[in-house]
Length: 53
Image (cartoon, rainbow, N blue to C red; front, top):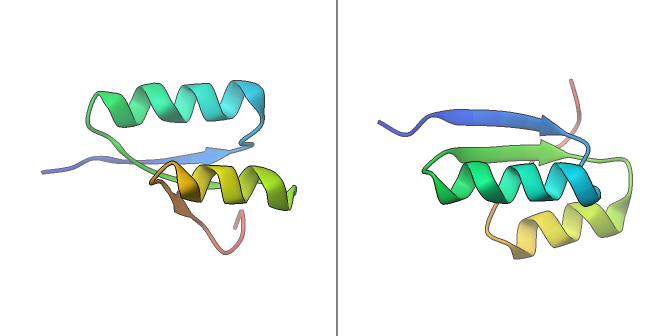
């Protein structure tokens, strides 16, 4: 069973935390108001949420 974590804020700190969570087996779903951060998150193989709610 894969556990899922929601991440709000995918800047420098949030993206590093998401990468570490993914490395240990979590499915990471995240969102950020900055388009570039969302695109970087998606390119890294993580899931981008439509909104923060």
